[in-house]
Length: 117
Image 1 (cartoon, rainbow, N blue to C red):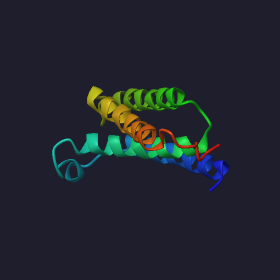
Image 2: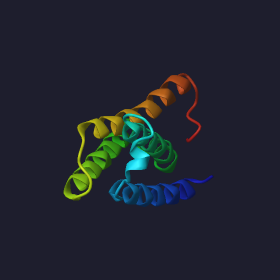
Image 3: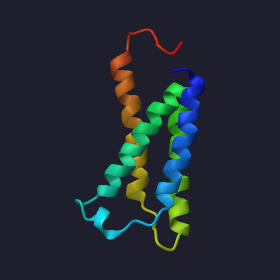
Image 4: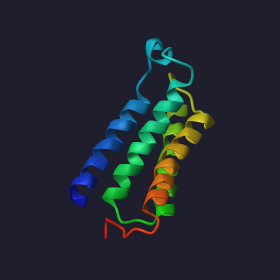
């Protein structure tokens, strides 16, 4: 796929995930297992990191900074909603999810030519 396609996917993902993070969560979803929300935050940001990495030619630190900013914004938005609450744990899961992708990328591409150039 081209960068333009990944950019469109990234934009759609940001909109969809923002909507989901703003949505009221019913009790049955949160009762699956303890800290299911942290796993969801980790997974969403791992996926966003993959898409962002393929969509934009930005340095690794810039991508992590942008995704961390988005994670902080999500928590601020959730704090403003009467049926949601902000959580440092969720923000940490966001950051760790994104950073995990980039760490795996660095580990598995060290010494290899960048396939995106």
